[in-house]
View 1: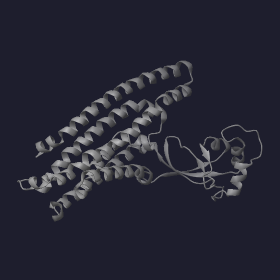
View 2: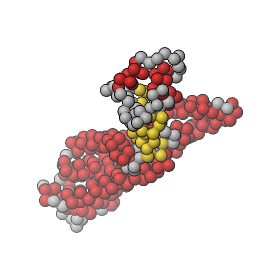
View 3: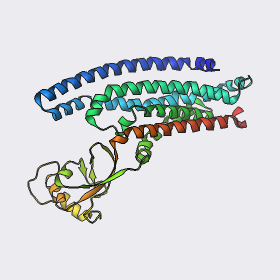
View 4: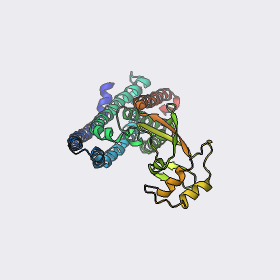
Length: 340
């Protein structure tokens, strides 16, 4: 049974192996290039003393390339679910070959378990190898950036992508089992996995562990360190605040010393027509005006030392979902309607 499953999967396996070899070769080259550049910038830092500038330039040289690779890698589980998972069972129903298999000595459940296990393991191996190589190649840049919790970066490093691959494949297989038509199953899987990949980091990941909270004073320098002020609704918010060695998950509106939200009137006065002080910085006179109001924001964050805990917890979550999908498929394949 295992040999038959492998023979039926050999074309996809050969294509995947060829693609993996190309990707691996490029990532090995990129990793060596990044390390050469990192060593050069580190020597410049030690000899000239401008470490901040040197490391910022090093990060800037590779940031866009690595973000592009991470985003592209995020599509690999989507493609696995759509092109390996969805057709695996749906094609059997379209061709009617499932009846031939079930008339042999192989039980339905064994047939399904073997088919899914062989391809699921292949999917996890492919994604695991790419993830390991990309993590290795990008590690000098990640150390400089200190932003391992970034949505795109987190999902393209270490063990989490393996969980994504297992879940995406099982989801595709179960969709194919239910829909029984290859192209509709591929389309549904493609969209469903993308929706999960977008929703989970924003709606689920921040709540996997209780966040730490801190009140951050909004001095003029703190305001100038932000990326933006205000929102499209006119709320008194500060955008892009960071906590050293942490992932910020939530920032409250600007609050006064008694804990109340700053009124929009006072915020608009500082933002639209602040007293002229000649201050410099990103927000200049506005930052000075807000800094004199004794304001703060309540920041919820996850410390950086929880990174691996989040990696393992999220991986376990996706692997659990994959097992539940497998269990549902085994239950469903025993139903009378699936043999029609």
